Image (cartoon, rainbow, N blue to C red):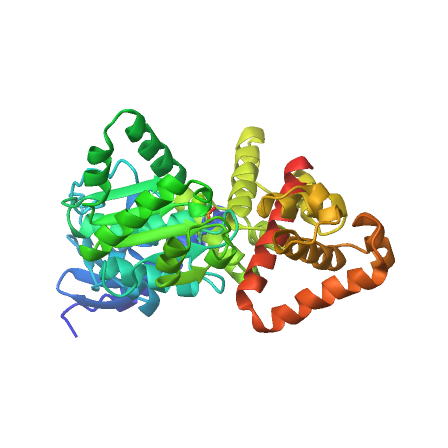
Length: 468
Ligand code: ADP
Ligand code: MG
């Protein structure tokens, strides 16, 4: 124990601050933005435990650390006190940004280091897509851990990684987080490309026209990190796939880290060359699912922390309860609400949010999905037409999507098998039952089929929402 143990002063300071914030009607501001625990002190330095570096930096830049320090100086009669933080919480320490327990300082002279060092941001990486802003949860824990492992040891353990799943579930975010991390570790001294597969394709095709394919090749085949987003845009583009295949092998030989994202499991990506398919399948394929309620709450809280906004608990719970589709929808509901409250210059209440979000919520309820919508989405997904689905063709390319459409229609609508028969080109109800049972049985043994169906269901809901 040091000469002046600050623990008692610390407690008293927090009591006083809390009382003040409550009296000012800012209880939740206090709860959100004074989240630190006394650990120990040494001389004039008080060490506090904080859940993440991000939270620490936010509290520093809001001036709250200064507020605490001033209060303690006032109570203890001491001056020149410093507050330093230790990042606590195993799972956070685990994350790359805080791979070692770091100590950050703030002093009166504002020696506050918010950005540890100047590093020019990578032009292809979105600044906010980092591990620090990603909230792992039931739906993404494995993907998150794999992403961190790949970032820490690029090109070694998990190479390539493929993240797959429906829209708005964090595929791009995780992929870019890996990029940011490696880029920062190497202090920018690295050849990294992060592009949508579609741009990769266009760039290659343009290079053929411009007779600059050699340049294209030397650019992509000499990378240290390739992040290729949305590879479901590749099917059908044979020359591009071919080029990607050679790029892939060249990069693997250099132990360059590769990360891909896709909106469905690789096995469901029709029109992809087999040799490319097996390259992807030999890597680590992880899916991302929609977050559950608890994770949705954690995500909303994190977004509020980032936006430096505060809204009442009942409003947070209401949004989390009602927006179930994906993180992007959750995010846009939240920004919509905050934008609205700033516009009318009032604090958000449950009543306001209920009436404002009514439209987007009622359309995300499962009711009102039509067989037409289901057939349309499934036809698009498998690149066939709705009349193929309803028609008589019997090739596998069509029969399978048709069976899936029957299965999903039965699950998502109130239609009976005879009624479904009518919707599917006047087929007999036994045919409908057979289709349904076929998929149901296959689901028992084929987990990638389950993933595909989840994605399709989400696409169907999204499709309906986008048309209101
Ligand atoms: P996808 O590429 O799967 O369509 P994105 O990575 O673009 O989805 O994510 C959509 C939005 O949701 C982004 O703004 C992203 O930051 C956010 N997001 C997704 N998952 C998470 C998460 N687990 N934690 C925090 N934000 C997330
Ligand atoms: Mg994406």
